[in-house]
Image (cartoon, rainbow, N blue to C red; front, side, top):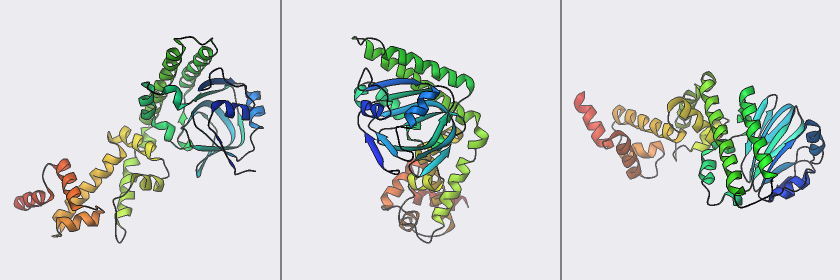
Length: 307
């Protein structure tokens, strides 16, 4: 029934469901499927079924028709892109048609326990982007990634021996580093598209504080949802533009707003802290001093003396 969710804990179970032979290694697989094969495999999964797994999914493909649904959003796919999905996340496809070969990497977290690649994957925020924030590749970038996928596929087809895991993880590490490079390049080269993210953030925070009462500090997830992007994507876009994470930008906004409130009226520091949504005035004072160098009361006194 469309709308069901199917969860695959093991890579082999997922591959079996789409009609692909079990991988040589149960915790990692790299595939290269032809255009005709994709159409055949897609027919094994009912359109609209939410799929989720206990492993990382990285796919290089050019979808020319159809929709990909991710959580509550959907993406009309028309370009060559790299899709990255973390364990436990859900995705559904509707009437997908691709052009050219499709390359897929499936990586179970158990395969990388204790390896440096665990930290690298945490740095790869794009695994937590929405599908509509996928990486759009140039022809040369797509070819570079295709070559890396293919090298990994070849290595995984070799007989397993003591050095295999190190070589496989080295290949995956290189692939992820290139993905990071291309994502960062996308932000920098398309600066005209991303350049207003800071302005959008400020406007959304203005709207948040325009409410009659703020009983808590604005949360990054809430602000990101209002801007229709994932929190990781917003943070990466702001880092490219401002050199600061989304959390740091939000803190700076709150500090700037508190400065204005300290100088505009004679509300107590406690009143200002509560008005901004802080549970504890002491926490507000500590944060203010860490950012400004003096306490809120000292800041107010210094500015009053100058005027």
